[in-house]
Length: 85
Image 1 (cartoon, rainbow, N blue to C red):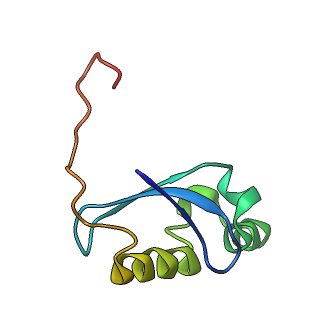
Image 2: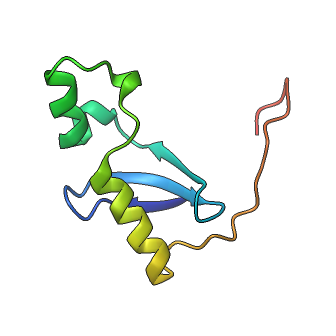
């Protein structure tokens, strides 16, 4: 996974891009504490698990992919039951 910062708020996440439509994001900090969009939606009463994405972070990821900063050549890995790795 590659570290990437949101161009809007500076929040850092880890990202892997497998294809133009498949992206994996791992938050490095609590999303509602580190992302203004998530914080606003939670404050409005939305449950954190019902927030699909931050549109500004998504735009940052897509722009990084367009610029070639974030490659789409990551090999897809699958967890193996009973093993960490």
